[in-house]
Amino acid sequence: MTHKPAEAATDSNQISVLTPFELSRVYAKGWLAGMNCEAGISAQTVHAKGESLNPYTVPTERVRWMEGFAGAVQRKYGIVADESGGAGAAG
Image (tube, rainbow, N blue to C red; front, side, top):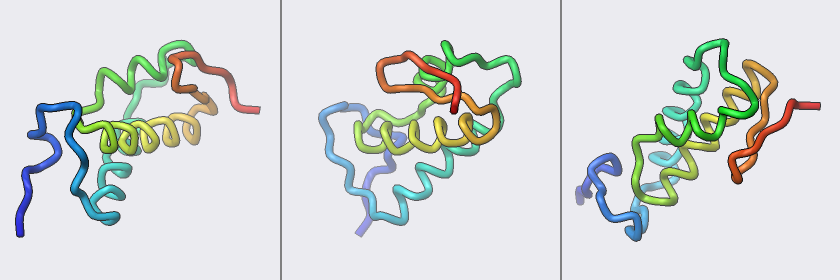
């Protein structure tokens, strides 16, 4: 059985039909994007940058991608973003 790729989804009310493995790949794509972020990213721009780069429209997939992105930025630069768009330095 095949399903429409997450990237092609257009309705934000759709429910993700991805397997746990596929969701891990979504996280990995977010991680890669976070690791490729320029050194000039600041605590104030982490969330906005992630939102602008996130290619997914289905909420479950968007959240999973953003988790990967934020994890990579935190690992690489020590910057932690919260979901409200604010951020703080890792302690």
